[in-house]
Length: 211
Image 1: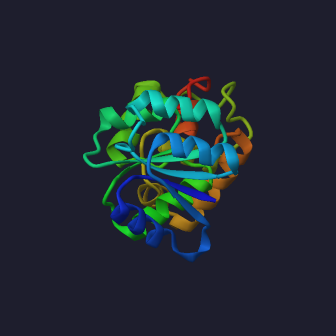
Image 2 (image 1 turned 90 degrees about the vertical axis):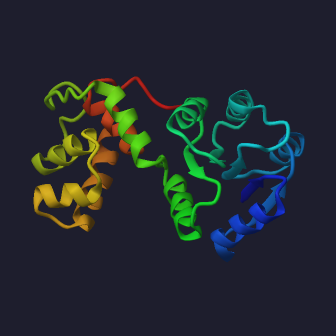
Image 3 (image 1 turned 135 degrees about the vertical axis):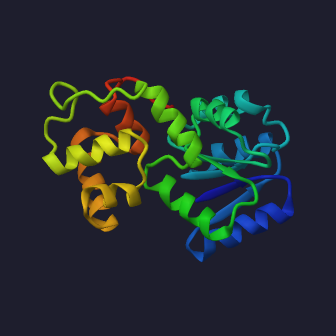
């Protein structure tokens, strides 16, 4: 079940169209209705407009996350910025998007978040990764990377440096499909869920997360 939190009919329709017929959806127009909905029925994903009446910014998101820790939240902002995105990531959201992003990209963001990863703009992702370790990439020994193959370790280090799958494929002389396979294996072996958590681990700060 996907809950759509907005009081704008055109946004609700746009997001439903992007999701397609593969999802059950429900729409709520304010925070009180959202709380009632979540208390009455399970939901796996919330598409949340940052101007939902009653939300009260970060505080409202924090309360939602505490009350429903397994609910994945994608926040949509009319004027997204890295500072705002970071604030909401620290409050527990799993995705941060432009309200009017292209529908195919929105569908991709939904799939990514449901797969357990974080969806943010590239500049914000690089900022988070840089903050994780200030560019220091230690060796594999003693930091949770011992079980990786040499090629997986190379991939993990490039991720920690902010490289995209395309760049990693070029650097290592492999296909993007192979990069994705390496990442799946890396996430499983290290117990990380997404690129950001992996970057934090590689940079020697496994205790820090965006939750």
